[in-house]
Image (cartoon, rainbow, N blue to C red):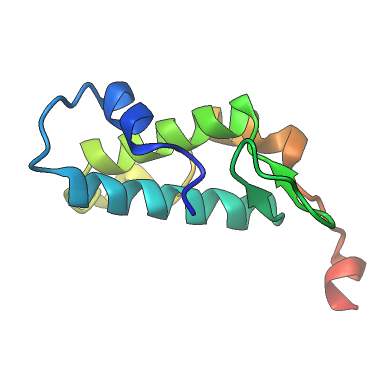
Length: 110
């Protein structure tokens, strides 16, 4: 289940047509996947009861997903060689930092 509604994503992208819905949905799904992996947590849609260590999607996580989706939508071509290899922009990383599980090297080895 998607964390961010397609209608909200399309409003954020200022897209009013339906011909690119499949592509936009793929970008949104990819953005959600990358962000959940970065957070190292289970994130559930707003309104769904979290269980265990899961957390509901917050406003900051929603904003990060929207920004990352827009980045993927706007940059459909292969990035220039010198643009760097960071998948998440500094703004997206700052939005996510309070929610990310930070592990030490020792924790990762156990």
